[in-house]
Length: 255
Image 1 (cartoon, rainbow, N blue to C red):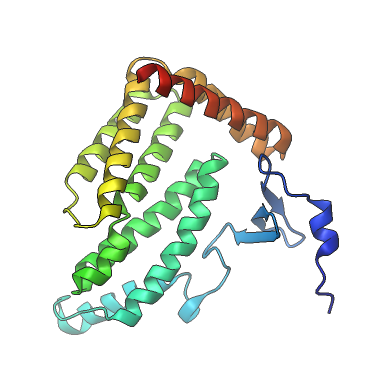
Image 2 (tube, one colour):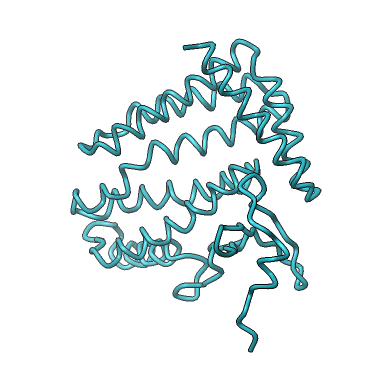
């Protein structure tokens, strides 16, 4: 068994401006690869990011949702269905895998898959919030809910913008702002920071759309998505730089 991956690393040198790619493998499935300074990470694009099937299910969350359904079938209620600390760790660890993948998908403008992964984690947050009694433990995860809502909403809005449905995109952002504002307060610095950052980001994006300033960035995002689909990663890196520059210029002007 050949374990030395030196040749593979030399074929794809680390470049901080071009370190993400989607490959189609011989068996037909697509994977997302990330070049790190000292190695390569690989994520499955379907099912769990690590390709595992815990409990012979697509995800740990699916297993626990099935357990809840069975409990309700037996007792006609979800009363007394509870999660313990070990359950929480399994679910939290899975949430971190999905977080790592959707962060990368968001960067390469694969908004459909970003939505799918963020919705998995939002459902996971709701499940833990409802069935785990230990506030301190569950808040380790729930304090990040504003950020997940933000990424989910902006991804949905971007898809609307691609179809020239600006009004629909704005409504999505407004609903996300209301949702974050109504999330029960968590007394941690992380929650306060994530809430403020997420609201600021959503309001800035909404303002850009309302003022008609979003079109240039939107066109670049569309071109970026097409470049990634065609595996033109050099052009994709250039487009990401242009988008970042425009956003920084607008932020500076607004300040």
